[in-house]
Image (cartoon, rainbow, N blue to C red):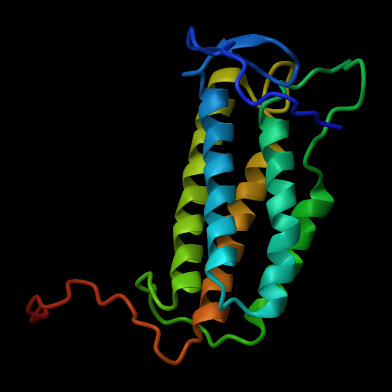
Amino acid sequence: MVTLSKIYTRTGDAGSTRLSDNSEVRKTDRRVEAYGHVDEANSAVGLAVALGGLPERVVEMLALVRNELFDVGADISNPLDPDPKWPPLRIEQASIDRLEAYCDELQEELPVLRSFILPGGTPGGAQLHVARTIARRAERAAWACAEEHGMDTDGGVNSLAITYLNRLSDLLFIMSRATNGTEHEVLWVPGTDREKPTQ
């Protein structure tokens, strides 16, 4: 259980922070950057819910996702240890399977896309697009962290945490379509107003 009796501590004023294993790193460490982007993605999802207008089923799904994003951040914040003193909080395959099931469930009701969609629509739907792009950024940052610290190895990053972020961005895209409805989707037209090639 987490206890937050005092919010400011002054311990990070020198540009360092502590990871979940209590090791001290600079705030510019790639691991800190990665879980910071995860936190931002979670805040963006929270704003989408707060704006309202999301289908009830999407809100139900996001309630679990918002909790799991804290799990993802905790996972990335905790370097892998082959012999931990206690079982750490890690993303497991079951969480990824659930995201894929959510994708399949929502996708069943949507028509096939013939091009990319321009972000927009309702306030909630547009915000889901914002959350999607932040989740993609969090995934890229997690990959950079894994390249620096290793993956699925001592001191490294749990690959399933990165996979979770990838599936989440897919889910948020599908959720934006389910929220906005597909009738008025604005599709990307490559080249827009350029003359069409003659050959």
